[in-house]
Amino acid sequence: MNKLFYIAVIVFLPSIGFGQTALEHYNQGTEMFEQGNHAGAIKAFSAALTLDSTFAEAYMGRGSVYASIQKFELAENDLTASILNDPTVSDAFFNRAFVYMELGELDLALRDLNMYVVINPNDMNAYLARVDILIQQNEQVKTYQDFETIIRTPANGPEQYVQRGRIKILMQDTTGALSDYDSALALDPTYMGAYQLRANLYYYTSKFYLAIQDLNIYLMAIEDDWTAYLLRGECYGMLQEYTLAIDDYDEALRLKPNHADAYFDRGFFNLQIERFEESIADFKKAIVYGYRDARLIYYNKGIAEYRMGNKEQACSDWKNAADLAADYRNKYCN
Image 1 (cartoon, rainbow, N blue to C red):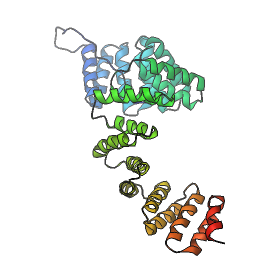
Image 2 (image 1 turned 135 degrees about the vertical axis):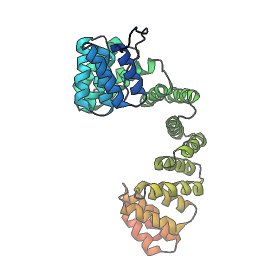
Image 3 (image 1 turned 135 degrees about the horizontal axis):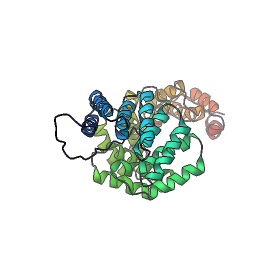
Image 4 (image 1 turned 90 degrees about the vertical axis):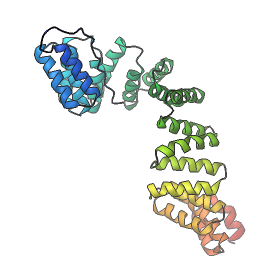
């Protein structure tokens, strides 16, 4: 669930006199919270509550600040007070749901979100939050129902387009997901997460050149994401641009030096361009770091060893590859 808190500024007419009203303290607290001044916001909301102990929005505001700084018990107390004083302050239900999720009280969080969507049926964020819980509770039917609601709900801003696109991926609507990612980037061309997600979609739909273009933009901004280097390297590999693929895998392994799959893949790319020594070294490291299928390693390492003239070692590797290398054993080892 995203750490999203709802607090609204309540418009008011200027008061006559020297002292601030509860409403003025509340609006001041809201502005301070938006500026990241948590201590000042708590002080302002508390001042509002001193003047009006039934001010539901002020309880909601202070509770939301407490939630944002992970003081969840204080947050729960204030958000509950907000609901008790005025149940129509629906944002208190949403924010308390976040608190319950952080406390591991998923049933209570789900109860609050159910109440919130009754009052706010067009708020996509609430359905996205509820889906998080339903997935954890393995409620497949209800999860799918919320998926359906999310994809029908109009997106409000780039973040919601991205989130809706991710849901469409889960529902195997790649065309709809691509449209949502495009819309997010049209609204915010600096949204790096959208480039990364669109690149993944392009990769899985075999549009490797387009994936590389998005990853080029993403990696100019996010230089330390080893998964992006791996993905771009895989794209280059699928295009048989093995030298470029190796360059990206070098960078990925610099950032993630014990990644077994990366060593195996780089070993395979080295094998394709007849860099047999480098290929063998990579396959050995893939074994050390626990690659998921040792037979594949020995199959490919055997080829590299044989091309290096190491027939005995090649036959030993093909023996370890079992049925995968039966043809090679029969042809070269008998």
